Image (tube, rainbow, N blue to C red; front, side, top):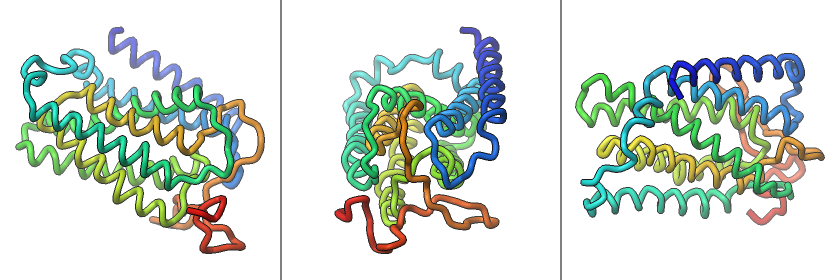
Length: 266
């Protein structure tokens, strides 16, 4: 698809989703979590990520470059580093992250969870990739591209995750302790390792695949409800952050302040 058409389609879709949100869900209480509201907010964000990727030229590069080069396929260092990225994400997200995540006995909706994680990963992967793409265009040394991209990716992840995603999209799935551990063991190393691979080898699609692999796991193991799911869900707990804005605080049972999970066994 021509990129201009692609951008136009996504802008139209963004306008439609914003219209639906403003007409149906504007002013929805922060302390009440509803699947349809969360999915609508997420789709607005996903569309925004795709538009930014297309406008910055990131998507064009991603689509036009080979997935891997012939030289990389016979390079044992490339193969080892690439495998290490996926292995680390498997250990960090499919194993450790899943064990540190609250679900409050939510049901699995595996089909919709995989779909959501897929579009989340493709979208988030592209907007993070866009930071690298733009810094790489400046012509600064590779170490400079790495540091500047890392700073931008980390800042984006922090503000979007903490001040938007974990309040307005995800149902409650963390504790104050798990937030700290996941940040140090999963999120920061993910950015550092996969960005290093990207800076050295510039495999755009593989970078997006690493992030998609991580976020499919995150969606499944928090048991993200399908848009048609019924029932009551734990809304994220918040506390004041920068400039007094609410950000995700993690779950603490008011009657049992030390409780770390829905069954008390975390």
